[in-house]
Image 1 (cartoon, chains in turn cyan, brown):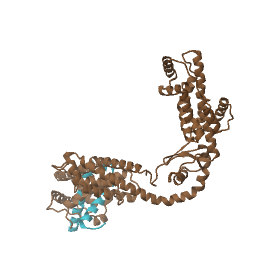
Image 2 (cartoon, rainbow over the protein chains, first blue to last red):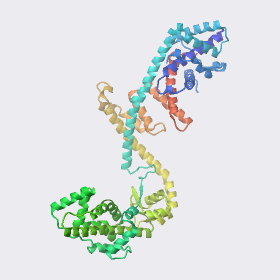
Image 3 (tube, chains in turn yellow, purple):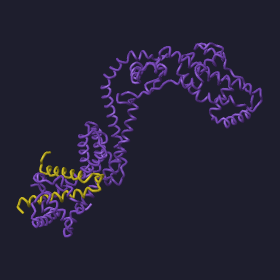
Image 4 (cartoon, chains in turn red, brown):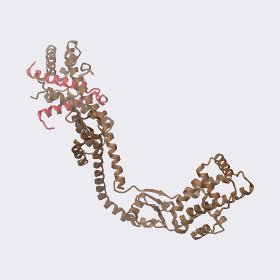
Length: 60
Length: 514
């Protein structure tokens, strides 16, 4: 595996782990269960990107 | 839900392209900070091994496939259990935050809001300002002529009975009506009956005819007491015929056909348990009372005739309720708004009395256009003035209700050694600030202000405060996309807020930005 591939797989894995933690954490909170998996995945993706941008100081 | 039970391929439609991977969030976990970073590193080592063995090209899709395989592999259970542990702690925190908002703060805010709104409404009512235009609400009713005529078998029948009873022409002459009263046409004779017989007869009447004690006694008094009937006749029609107090006749006749007339009909088929001679006097007296009612109905028809001849549309009322003459109203084709507007401008504003012969439909029609323009011109100014009055009343009510709320705080919630009164006093400045800035911007409406107040008092700098802020932002975001929120939008907002709390936690606590 090249360095770039290593970086890519680490990023992807980190991303997947965070997605899983968030998905698991919010299950059963409020009416989140009424939202489909795809919709909640969309929201998680968007919010994770927002949170990282915020951390980096990127204005959206 | 455990992490290993989740199928990560659901993310493929979103992140399953190389393009996404190139632009994916630059997440990196600081290995020195936490267990999660170590766990990810360990998982990564295993993932790299799996991918090296598979000798497949490294793509987002292949990484997801290998990651899902790792979830199924029991030897990785201890690593995923750590992730589950973090997720469940995070979930419990989010759940507590949501529950505090839903089951503690929301009911408190709802109660406070209801109290403040009630107090505001009362204050506005006292100020006689109850609609958005700054006016009192004016009800419109139509006259009871038809109901009364209907009960007495119609206009023709009333006139015939009047003619038969009085020997006069039915020419609606008010003077003749008054003379009938003055000439003691309706005087009743004394009924010679002892108290016990009277009591026994009336009780039998009430039982047999199903009449109320109160109504029976009142009508019996009219049948047997000359003064009572005379006073009744004066109130019912004579005063109206003499002084033009038409509305009094209308009100009293309406009550007479509802209460007195049905009892009279019942007495008509009733025989007193006494001598024939007394029964004969009773029949004659009863007829006199019928005559009074007939004359009352006839007077009312004379009043209606006067109103109709005069094109009278509004016959009585004040700023709260106006009474229309149904015949003229049906032909005039004027809207209630136009009529109310005219009455407010020409009569109620300067407390000018309504003329005895009513307000003509022609008068309303002639002024309609001008008054509508005038009204529209004043509307904006009035609305601003009313909004300002309402805001001031609400702000005042808010101060009172919030102060009272803090005074009555459960002692368990108060700081040690501080009672409710002291606590309220200490927070008087906060109450004043919230009350003063009420409705100063669109998001400072009553409900938002109360949420902020309660959070400020009890949950300052807590996840609850942050979550409430996020809810507000999400609602604004959704409302910028559509005019109103539906149930699915509320669910999306719940999800967005929960996700945001979780992602912020992960990114802020666990990630280092490169």
